[in-house]
Length: 256
Image (cartoon, rainbow, N blue to C red; front, side, top):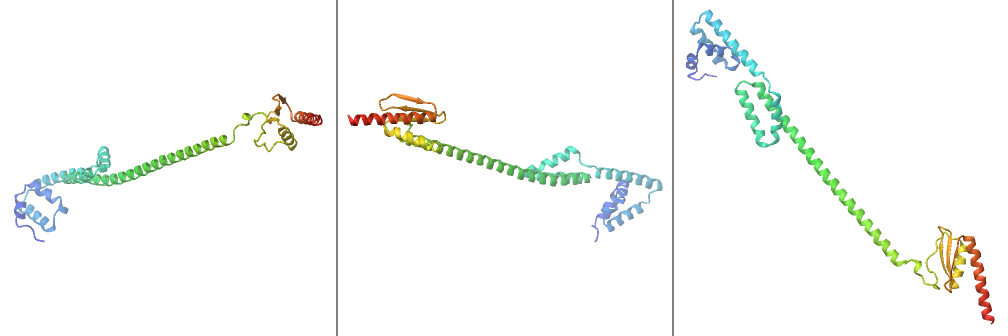
């Protein structure tokens, strides 16, 4: 590849320090360009002392460049670069900052900026995915709670209205008038002999109220008088005697 026409003139116009600095960066030039630089250095025919002085100066510059190139980004800088990809504008700004570092010789800082940018993009992507997932999960939990509460309320309301309807269809037997047969269903736990005794009394116009939990019976006679019996055995005895007396009275009335 041929060199630009004015390249040799440009090299000839450089100072001795810049010329030796170019000699110290052979990797930055094409072989033809570097050969032109070496030819210019030979043409100047510098003294040995001057050459040593220029080489020392060039070595110092290379050492400074190497130190600058290997300098890493500070912790605060890395933290900011990690947070910057939060938005599109800041994400586009990081490559500009990295290129600025590279142009000033901070090669490692430039690479740290680009690596931090990609880590930041990954971090914020995972963050927003988790955030929206938790948000949707919370909304689903709230919706499920509302549906459960509403269902429980409807079930409770239906149970209340059903119990109220049953109470209207089966009024309390305490409102039964004297002499009226008791039509309320008897508990299945009542023995058959007690049932027979209560039914026989009711057919004769008695009103019988059984308090089985306490074992007591309250009987209202047809004439309105009341009698309380404390035990089931006493009730059976009293009921048989009462029915015998009632039958005897009825027979005597019929005979007379």
